[in-house]
Image (tube, rainbow over all chains, first blue to last red; front, top):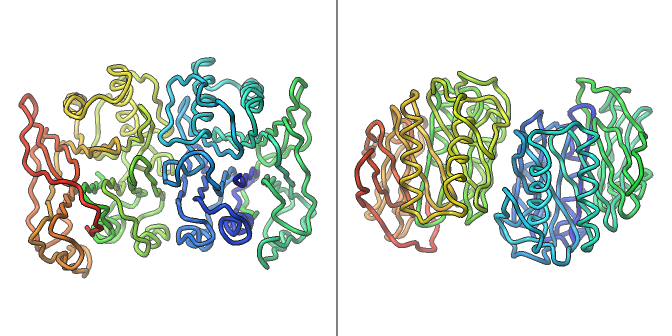
Length: 276
Length: 276
């Protein structure tokens, strides 16, 4: 297994607090020693940092602890390899361009027979099941529309493709097209939304406490999603198996297989910086 | 204009010496203040660092000075924007996947009417002429072959596509498919190859001197290509306008428009680390 971390926010938000916990699980407080990566969206652009070294001992991960990158969508992953050797090309998140947008994907779990799924237009660079699943999803989307469809249509398509992969095994997944963060729960995924009135939080994996009231404005909304809770003094909500969360600007829509989406949190974007 | 830096080597090589000079040209010894980026290949994988900040003042560029990444193919770019605003998505090098390989592209110069060239399968994320040219090249290649062709065939195709872009203006370009580094000279590009017996070199842009004899073995071959010479005590060779250099394992083949390739330097790969 691996661990995932995602963030969606309505303001550019510094993820270093949450990433610090995840990074320690890559070799110190967790066994995920086979590489790590993180992608930060900034508008339509994104930048990724990958390292096949364990995140707990990675020089690059240490550098990121001291280098605040504020982003409204983040996807991060620490890897415990099961399929595909430990190498840079097998290190999540994976990225591709489709319809003039940067897509990013990270996964944990195993998918039986996924490599039999036919690929069109996108091919894996590495040898993981995960990258094959990502290429298959993008190929299916590209076959369906010539340009980016409107959000509700894309949300349903991502949920349907996720359900097909869910049927093959364990499909805990984070995906973004630079506009939306999608999360599919195959087995284990939880989230929390921070909004006013903000409180404090303390990491589980190290002695780091943040008072979010000092870091935010009352209009900020930040949702963090992770394989396991990252803080010990906040309430994390488990996602049900098979559910898809659709996150935009920190707000969440839940797509349960075969049901209509239900809006649970939304907020207008504001131009202030926050921390997660 | 912008400045380019490329490297091809037969051993994993630390580019920090050359990159230090380029980075200073992004706001200190040169006017290229509109962002910078660098891509390092490691086998089939690659990692890129991008920053829309001037490289001379970039925290991320400083971090890379202290973080040796050894690579056999590197492409770097410092930007002085003419088309496309200063933003992460307009920051070179650009990357895409084609035939299960990561392609990387950086360009300087202006290309009249390039956005009229039809795109197939690849679309720009940002608004630069350069990314449009890159997407056009990849679309043309993808239309021609279903899988990666053998090197000599691809070399010729890249040279032919480069000649078409050269006809539109100034096309100084670096391109890699993870196996080969291609360089097209539109107006200004020079290179040097370091091999045994190694000497010393001193940067033009700062007081940094390296004795390569201390950093290498006698089988190492490293070719560095740049818009302008980076060192003051080595002989840099200008590339002629319209010529394409094909670099593999530090060796160079010259493709002059309409002629057969001539082999000039080759060497077998060795597993030692070097510095450029």
